[in-house]
Image (cartoon, rainbow, N blue to C red):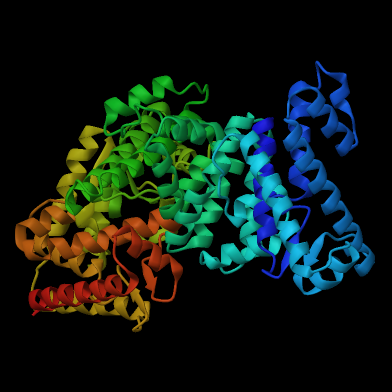
Length: 621
């Protein structure tokens, strides 16, 4: 409690210092009235329980009793008493002059105050004033017995709730556009009921961390989003004790927490809404979950009766741990290694969940295939699933057609644990208007009669996930026949090129808005090149990186760079956008994750896309 008194006093002094150099708050300043009162109150708190005489309310009487009790020397007692009387008299004169309750001594009025206080000269008055303040400060600091802390305007306002304008201006100087808004966001952390349950030591530790938080705010490329995420983690996620424990143990978890707040709104939202995920994610053994063995082990730990909710919890944990591992190793892994590792984690998780749902729903006589990123094993956090269901025959479909419907329902249903996946069925025959789960015979006819050119490219990514092995064998034969019976001639090339340029036109790129996926020289250029390579060489492979290494390794670094941007866009906002705007703060955040400034990043993206387009045109010519 005594430490709290000294800390609060120093903060009050800091707030008093913010006034004009020609104004002094004689109550709150160093060596002022409040410092004398605090000195007396310290002795009352420490010894008033045993000495009833110290419980005196009047400051002068209480001060005399402190001296009588031998707690202060006679000399110090007299200095404090003289200073107190002097300052109170001055306060009275100031208030009479201004006709309001104020303790502000304006130096321009020093001559008048000197005369009214009975001094012959103003210099004599000011010298006495400064001597009293010096004496009081010396005694107070001696009693405090510790080095004076320096507080920022934000720290001072959090404790004293004084000088709001100073705190607002200070936050704006850190780069925040609306200092008042930012102050309120920060205050929510310190006004939360969970904060008041902390010990005084814990509260002080959090308060002492404020300058570090201010440094992170200043260095963040999107300060407002960073602040919102920090607020979410504390107020919604209740990470107070986790954070303070990490601080006390000098753990790197503090940096991880702030890095997540800076770089990923998506992961922030997950861990702020589910405290159990936070416990898993920031535990000392929080390594990533990589394969089926890891997923099964984690499921055995998750204590949820509902199997689907357990899967939903598993997905959140696996995604958070995967992202933490991605950022933790960003300086140690090559770009292609860290990208492939994250993609493998998320894809393996999707495969595991689909296999589990097939088993739970007693799947029979049908297979599940993945297209898109699921098929090519390039799943990202928050990616949807491009699914294909295929039955052995019409009889099997008649008996078991409700099972694929139930699997889709299980995947997309929302509960308090969230949702497993969004499903994209547009790549199935006839798109949304088509059947959910046709038979092998249907596909045999469709591939030979109705499939369009773009579907040939899309189906190069088709990959078996789970289901009936006999269905898999026959469907693989149909897919190969469909893909490799196509004549790759000039006409086919021209149609593919025309299709690619139409997709590009939809993006409406400008100098200040780029699309890293569908735009000129984007990811789709490389995907088309790899898919054409597989078709020409009759290779039944689905991976894009694998194909690049086979036919044009020179383009690998450029492809991985754009894919990493795509990944980080997903991590930052949780959306599937592939567009970058030069004016959007999100783009600056992405640049920051690469350790480069916005201008350098923007030029690198443009140069990368130009090189990719040259490779693309060379192949199609």
